[in-house]
Length: 155
Ligand code: DQA
Image (cartoon, rainbow, N blue to C red; front, side, top):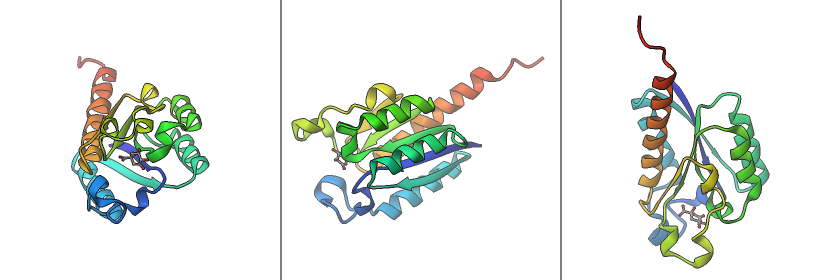
């Protein structure tokens, strides 16, 4: 069973209520419930962590190296400038998928660049809450591929 950490950065606890025209109407709790369910259907355990504080997010990523196989992260606004989060992801070496609900490339210029994508396996944006879902499926597929590559041939 794969163990996955889902990380939400600042202001994402307000999902459902915050700028629904940009981020959708699905609540934070509902997104997490769906993610946990889909993970379980795919034989994975998903733990959820949200913080508005950069240091707490760094701590959660560091802690994940003791138990998780991979990370799905929506770093919120920290995506655009947090070298501390980038360094944490680099340090733990867990496969990490970055997700954003909105299409950050179709928004203000300061959102176009994320400093985290270079240390992530990939980045998904623009699919609303389903960015999380696609990110989870992508991560599970990566973990399955890795597990298969590590399995010695039978006989
Ligand atoms: C976001 C995009 C960021 O630019 C913004 O600061 C957020 C949410 C998204 O999911 O679309 O907080 O990460």
